[in-house]
Image (cartoon, rainbow, N blue to C red):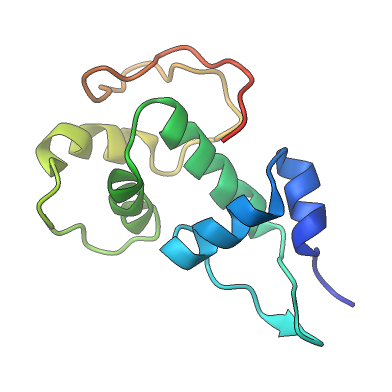
Length: 123
C-alpha cells in the first residue's frame, strides 16, 4: 500500500489521529485518498501539518491559517472578514519558507501578540 496511514502521520508529527482528521475536515490539509477505506497520505502532508503547527504556535487563528495556506497554495487571498491587513505581511514573508528553519524568521512582521519563540508543544 502506497503512502502513510493516519497513524504513521500522527506519530511523525507528534499529533493525535483525531487532530489530523479535524484539520482535514476544516480544509487545513487536503483530503487524503482512500485505499480499502483507509486514508493514505503522501509526504507533502507533513510539511502542511508543520505549517499549521507553526502558525498556531505564533498566534494565528484557524481562520487566519486558512488565509495563510491559501497564499502558500498560490491562490488569491480575499478579505473574508479577517484582519488580512494584519497578517498579510506575515503570510507573504512566511510563504515558501523552510518550516524546519530557525524561528523567528528575520525580517518578518508578526501578528500582534504572536509568540516569537518556539518551544516543543503539541497542537
